[in-house]
Length: 480
Image (cartoon, rainbow, N blue to C red; front, top):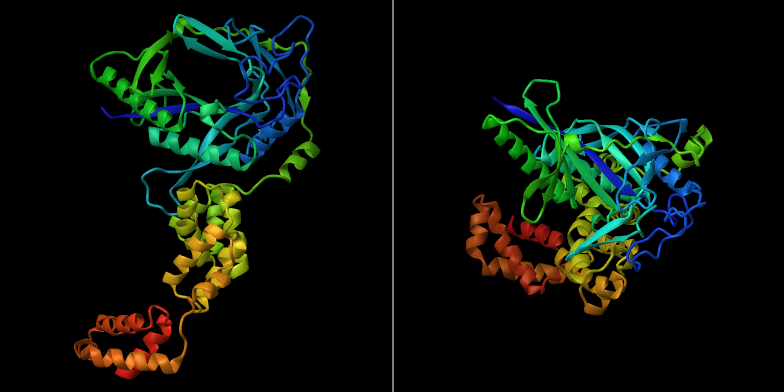
C-alpha cells in the first residue's frame, strides 16, 4: 500500500522589539544570566503586565504580509502549566481569539523545473497568535539552571494547516517564511539565538484518503536542516512501524540532529491540560482600520513578487533572480546599479558572480563594501562602451572592490583602455592573416571557428588591448 505524509508546522518567532511583551525590560541575547528581569518577568506579588504596542505592530505586519484576516478584537489568555522555565506557572498567550486568522505562505516546490511562473504553491495557515516567551533551562552535570533573560520576550506562533507532504516542502516553507519575516524587519530569525523555533506534527495515511492519521509531534528541531532531516526520519519510522504490522502511537518525540535519531518524550496520556482562561489583568485589543492601514503602508514587496518583477521588468534569468531576491539589501543594490547604468542583465551578472565572490572571500557585509552601485554602474558602462574588455574589467573590479577607487581612474592608472586606433589594428590584422594561412583557408572554406586563430593572434599582438568587436570586423573585411 502506498502512503503519503501529512505535516503541519508550529513556528515560534521572537519579534524584534526593544523591550519585552508586558514590561519595559530590554529584550536581548547574550547578557549575563537573569539580568534582563524585573518584578513582572519574575511574577513577584503585585506586579502587573502592560502591553507592548510595538509587538502588536509587528504581528499585524506579519499578518498583512501573509494575507491573514486581522481580528477586530483579540484577547489574552493564561496557559497554565508548572515548569521551571515559567516563573508565573502560566504563560500569557492567545487561545480562542488570536490576532491573525488564515493566510498563506508561497513556496517554490522542491525538485521541480525552475519556472518562475509555475511550480509554486501556497501553504495555508490556520492562525498566528502572540504570546510571551519562557525562560531557558541549561542542563549540566548533575544540575539544571534556569535563565529568565528570554522570559517575557514577544513571541508569535505561526500555525500551518496540515498541508505539507514532504520534508523538502517543510524546508521550502521555513525558508520562504524566514525570508519574508527578515525582509519585513519583524525578526532576525537567528535559530542559534532561539529567535526561530519549530515543532512538526507528522502523520501518514494511505494515498488518496482525506482523513488524518495518528500524529506524532517532533520537537528540538533547532535548525531548518534539522527540521527537514527530522521530518524525513519520522516519516521513515512511521512507514517502518506500519509495514511491520505495528500501530502508530500519538506521542511527542525528541529529535537529535547530531545522531539522526529520535526518542519518545511523552505519550498522549501525558499530554498537558493547560486550563486556558482569560487573563484578568489585560484588556482585549481592538484593531481598527486606521491601525491596519498605517502598518500596511510600511509593507515591503514580497520576495517571490519581486522575483517575478525582476523576471518581467529586467528580463533576468532564474539563476540571477534566485541569488538576488533572498536578500533585500542585495535586491536594492541591484536596482540602484541597473538604474544608473541602464544595463540590468550586465549588472545582475556582476553582482551574482563577482560581487558576491569578493564579499564572501573577504568576509565583508554588503553594507560595508567599498564597491557601491555607482562604482559598479560605471564599470558596466566602460565595458559596454568598449573602453575596456571583459577581462580587463575583471581586474578593475577586484581593484575597485578593495580600494573604493572609481573604475575610470583605475583604468587610466593601469593603462587598460582598449585600442581603437584603426591604422594600428589593421597592421596587426594583416600580420595575423599572413602568419595563419591555414586558418584563413579553413575560414574561407566555411569553417567559422577558424577565424578565432587569427583574432587570437591580433589580441596577443595588442597585449589584450584591442577592441574585440572591432578586431572581428577588420579580420572579416581583410579575409573577404
